[in-house]
Length: 187
Image 1 (spheres, rainbow, N blue to C red):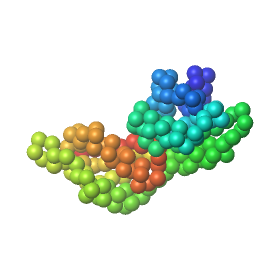
Image 2 (image 1 turned 30 degrees about the vertical axis):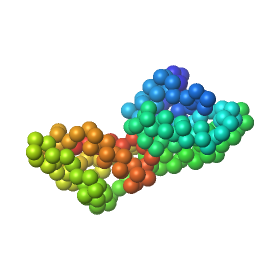
Image 3 (image 1 turned 45 degrees about the horizontal axis):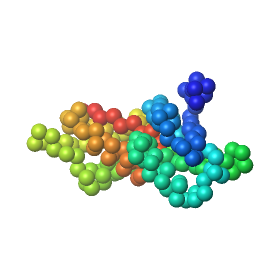
Image 4 (image 1 turned 180 degrees about the horizontal axis):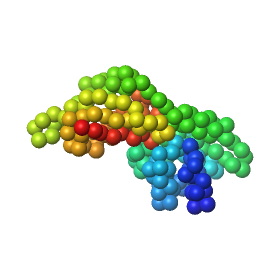
C-alpha cells in the first residue's frame, strides 16, 4: 500500500485490496479511512476469494464487519476476487465504474431540495436550547467527491449525528453507496 500512495493523489477511484481470510486489520482500516478522507471513490476487493468455502455467508459477515468498522463508508462495494485464477475481475471492474459514476454525480438544486424536504419531514432536525433547527435550502457545491451546502439556522448547532443521518439518507436516495459525500452547513 505504501508504494501506491504517491499515485493515489491523482486517482479518481481506489481499490483497497484485502486478504479475504483475514481482512480489516489496523493497516487496512487506516488505508480505507485515508481514501475516504481524501474524497476518492473506493471499492474493497477481497483477494484469495478461492480460499473461502461458503462465499455468501462469509461475504455477508464481512459486509457487516465493514459497516461496523467503517461507518463513514456505508455501502462501499465489496468484491471477492482470485488474482491467481483471474476470477471476478469483471465484477471488480464493474464496481469501479459504478462507484466512479456516483463519485462524478451532479444533482439539480430542485432535486436536492425535494429530497431535503422529504428527509426533514421523515426525521426533523433536533431542537437545541429549546429552539428547533431549520434546514432551509441545499445546493451542490462541487463534484469529485459530491459536495453540498445546506443553509440552516444556527448551522454550528446541527449535531454530527444528524449530519450522518443526512449523508446516509443521501447515499441511499441517490444510489451512491460507499461514495464520500461532503456536507457543509452555512448560516
